[in-house]
Length: 401
Ligand code: ATP
Ligand code: MG
Image 1 (cartoon, rainbow, N blue to C red):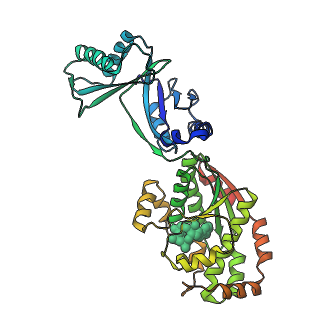
Image 2 (tube, rainbow, N blue to C red):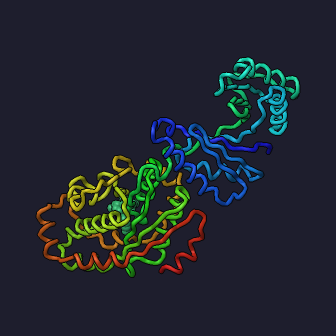
Image 3 (cartoon, protein in one colour):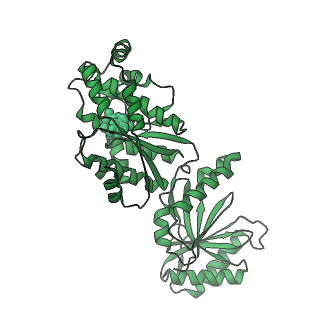
């Protein structure tokens, strides 16, 4: 392949006025991070575009990684050529030869970012198209349904040629919208919620509650594997693991059975909020979806949410399960979530949890149970794992549990 650079288009980013430089800088760092294994590349970003010089690195491997980075609308492998028109024509032929364009239908689409260039777009289309027709066998022009669309972009410093546009992941660069804590279970929903939050530019860190020995080694492995998937999106995923067994046992001993779920959720939210506060995040994300289970009725959410003023972001709140599953499949978390291992909450789920819990009852019960020391102890026991994209988690799991 003769392409020597990748051109990245920012899309929605360009609309962000004064904050643009910040966004571009964030995106550049994120790109640099996911491509850190390609030692020879050089990244150059300006307000409109980002360019990656390949310096011999494999375009296909890089393309695969780039397609997952949020904040990129589209990208193309390009050939950067000198602005001399004879040279442009020659390089276009070169490119068509490389692409085995013989016998194909084609068109040329020129665009001038530099309007002072001596030829306008019509001239360029005709001159380059004509030259290709003369030099490549069996080529035919088809402006409506071309097999090959040669894009010629005239800029101040050079002309860029490309025949491919690859759709990017869209969204905003991870980290450009601030930091939030994701309550990550081993289920289907919360990883999807985390992914969607990342897509809107949030730097997401996970909080997971686990209850050994009621939850098995394999169920922790599951959460780490989910974290690894999310790390592929953001480069690195930080996970806070909260020991939850004693709190759950305490709740079960002191709270009437039909209220244990409500109280347990309130404590989980309270602890997540304390970690968020310590780590200077600005919001909490959950995988809740309205009406899905007893804890997710509006009445339950209202009572559970009472423990904090922190914004709780619920990206899935109005989504149907089918749609959530579809995204989980796309982002490769579904198979992990479907592994049959129990989550701390399912194990302690009462047979008939309250779907309309009463606040005053909850308050009464909570005053009596004296949970604070247990919360403090859990906070002291929090383990932090940093999961890096591409890391082998087996070793990590062994050292942890
Ligand atoms: P999920 O598929 O994400 O587990 P769910 O539909 O099974 O969601 P619940 O089990 O009621 O619903 O959980 C609701 C939300 O509470 C989850 O999406 C997640 O954000 C949070 N949550 C549940 N269990 C845990 C846990 N063990 N650790 C951290 N967060 C949890
Ligand atoms: Mg669950």
